[in-house]
Image (cartoon, rainbow, N blue to C red):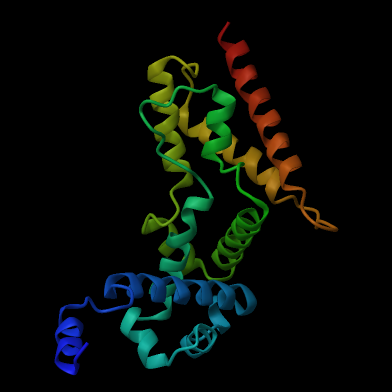
Length: 219
């Protein structure tokens, strides 16, 4: 092939590499991963944008092009992982036993890696909410984590469908979250690795007892 032919062929070739939008998504995910690591290690108050940029392998200037400040980055980090806490709302056409729905709602089907990431997220949110009350307001007022509200909506839909007895949806949502937190975040410090499978079955057993008690009280 002549040099002219090679140039003509090259001119019509598509540029290699990922689209810019894909590259931006990957870059953002990398920043959020770095932020999660930094916030867990140092806490919100001590973590700096410089720390996060260093962990992400970029300049602080590039980081500020993506996120305007540390508060926004913290919030976006929580939002990016909120799906690990609850899988709500549920599909309208879901037709499986209640126990299986609860397993899906509370993400009791996560593998060990994602389950560990969820524990880190919950620990981070609980810790920082206590240490920095303004973060607690930021997290919940922004809707980053709406566990109770989403559960209330699901309970009311199930009541309308006749699968859950008519009860105070707010109280039931609170009790369900207490059950889950009681197993996943016990007051006593754990020794050794967490048995995720055991935790999942223990949560489902306790929730089943809760719903059985509600049903019995309606008789």
